Length: 299
Image 1 (cartoon, rainbow, N blue to C red):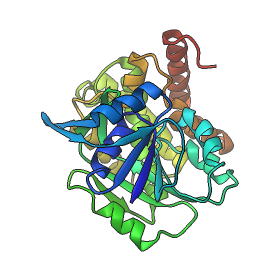
Image 2: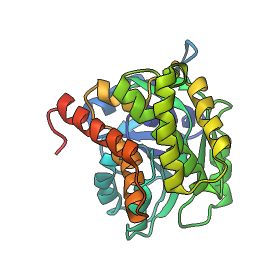
Image 3: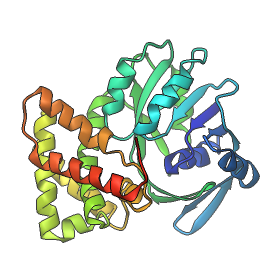
């Protein structure tokens, strides 16, 4: 397939690296400098000290036609991308954003495109404009937002790599909710405390705070089987103990975080259900202060 990957961040580069092993991949980025670097050096992926170089094309605009577009930009960049996508003829588009706020945008988007939703369970850290470190192997689970999935798309995405499996699921909303739960338990606290994921369970006080976030989130999402879900959150902390969450990386580098896509979505849902969420509200406001203090402006 001819695949266009919109976004040159860690997840965009990771997808480009693995998908290029079986497909013709083009990274679509905002900056000309990054596109030139990718064209010159390819995408360099590091996993367990093993380096792999992928030959990948790159461009700065949505030029040409693709069999599949994969949108990997963060939520606060999504509106600009949707405007550009609206000008294209009918495409198959897979969205890979954290949180669930983007579902509301896609629901209200008047488009003929075939829309798909995915959840990224991999850990990745961007090393440079053309390099990414694969810090944790997981899955990308995806499904159809509006349209049925054609067999060829499911087959083509299934056969990628042992370390990069893309699994189709009809129950994608449940998958998104469970990923959102993990994100809201780990990301805000690690960003506020400036700690790696594993410290949330090695420090009793931090785990106590994480449990409060967990309880409020499962109540808002009306998720059953709380003990299984808590065990899942703790296991993710163990598996990614040495990792810096994406939200912590954003705070450290003075970038806007995905708090609106993660905490913001939950707080809006809580408000409509008249559910109190004092701890999530505190985390959200604290992160907003950090964002404004560590960057010039996001407005």
